[in-house]
Length: 72
Image (cartoon, rainbow, N blue to C red; front, side):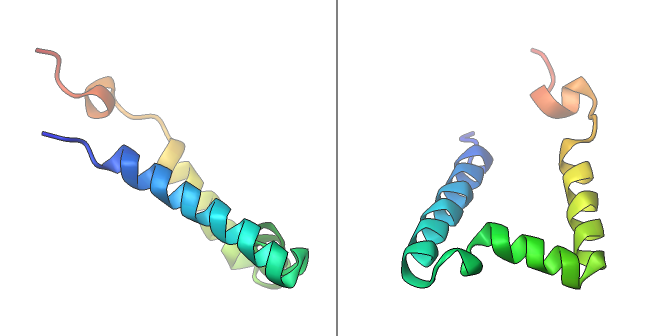
């Protein structure tokens, strides 16, 4: 079975990077992804909490067999 999740993650990162480059060239740094995230963090403290919660979910420890699969 082909694993598509790594390709999806890489594609999303590339798309964000391309978009960020394009939007900075067109409208300036104030519209960049980084500036928007910082602005939202100041305006909506719950956004910062949810972002931290999501990162914790993505990077929290997992059992080895859940990460690498069952050894054959």
